[in-house]
Image (cartoon, rainbow, N blue to C red; front, top):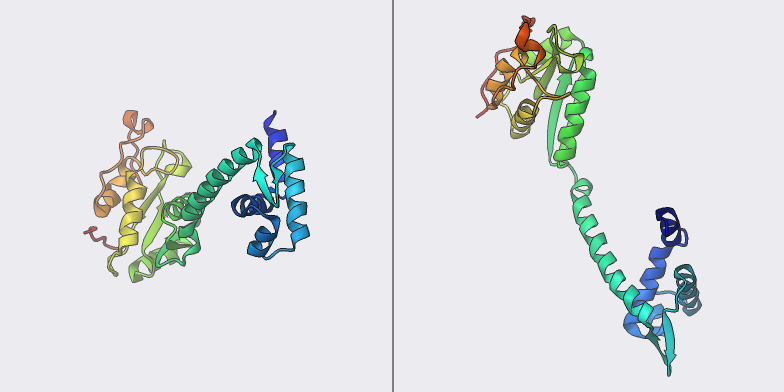
Length: 244
């Protein structure tokens, strides 16, 4: 059976509620008892069982006096229900972190020329650390430097003019010395500066100043910078403090 037909069989008939009913009947051995346990009308339980059997094209129960007994197919489905329950439980555990309110807040600021890079770094950090609320403010160069001097934000992303590097890699990250660097900011800097060369990596001379501040090793220079090393524009920033 093709994947499309398989998915259609298991998802077009509201199969999860039907499996819930089936599991209760299999466990309790009676439609009446299952209806009482699920707080459903007895006819509703019977209809759900019939829809499930029709969707799967197998007989799930056979009469056994006043009780119902599982067929071989029903026993096999019962085992699958247990596996499905474990799978859903693991999924719920993975998603739990995103349901809990963020306990920490990271403030980022960037200038418009590096909006795309800053957004990518913020999204990547947020996906790795869902317990941290990340706020990104895009402001012009003058306002960004003023915020950096005042220590308004935790981390700043600035544009650099470096010939020979793609626009996505012409940036630097720093933090202000006017406020104590918090654990989230330190972690953001380390992760941003220690990633291997790529679209969101800080490379070459642009990374040297900030990598030391963040406690990370500077990234290797880009291949294009080895043959003709461009002189980066020095970006005025507030004094930096080392990450402890």
